[in-house]
Amino acid sequence: MRTYTELIAGNPAIADEHDGDRLLQMAQLVNSGSFDLGQLSTLMEETYPARCKWIIQEGPLWSAVQERYPALKSAKFVREEFKRVIPSSDKLEVYLTEQVKTNIVQRVNSVAADTAVELLLDKLQCACSYSGDDLSTTICIAALPVMMKECMRHWVSEDDGTKTNNPYVRVLTSKGKYGEGAEYVPMVEGVRAVTDQNLSIRECFILLAQIIHILALAYPKQTFKSWKLLSEVYLNIQEDRRLVKKGKPSLKYELERQSFVAYANGADTP
Image (cartoon, rainbow, N blue to C red; front, side, top):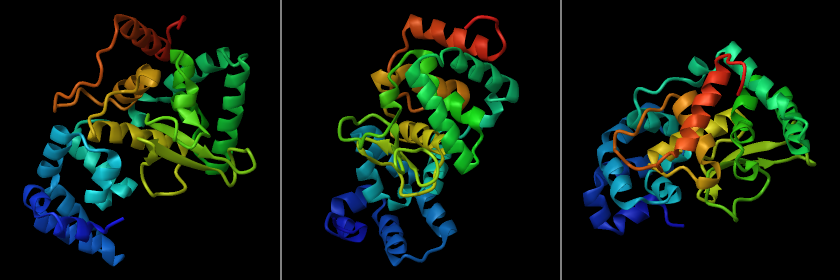
């Protein structure tokens, strides 16, 4: 694969249209292997208008965006980019209070008689005992398809991503286990979303939700309700100001969302 410097130097049209001088500066910084993070953040901020226009008009793959803007291979710069796209979103913990988490976990446990759900809960407990991540928060996110009656295989899976372009968390297990030695990888469009390692399941899902909005992607149909709930309810991501359609929610979804939120807030029935 060509370096970013070669890509820009070999295509003046791209350089002119997409802030070429700054792109070359970024490429040189990243290729040097030793650079000032603040300087790279400044260059990403300065090139954001051109980058946003390119993404909206041409809809490039995430791998193409990363090739042109290699800083976005890092979770740190993905988070910064998301704040440019959706500056008013709140943190996950704002919604997932202790009481809300308790209510949601109770709902998941109520269907744990299902062997697949019980196995998932055991795996999540193993993962959190090793990573130190909060188990309740992880269950609230990782088990969303259980509550929304969607396909878990398109949400958390040990598959390598060759069968789907949907965003999901891939689990690289260690001897079939989710704890010590396992790795959790955010996947989008069949590739690893960031190069960071040692990410928790929770961190993977938040990054994927952010990338979905950075790229203005449609929520995948197999997990549409789960992604919509994670984005709009858990993360309080409001409608994208760029007016890119993410799929029209059905009346059934709206009723399910209202039921879910009511139950999470302490209603007697889901």
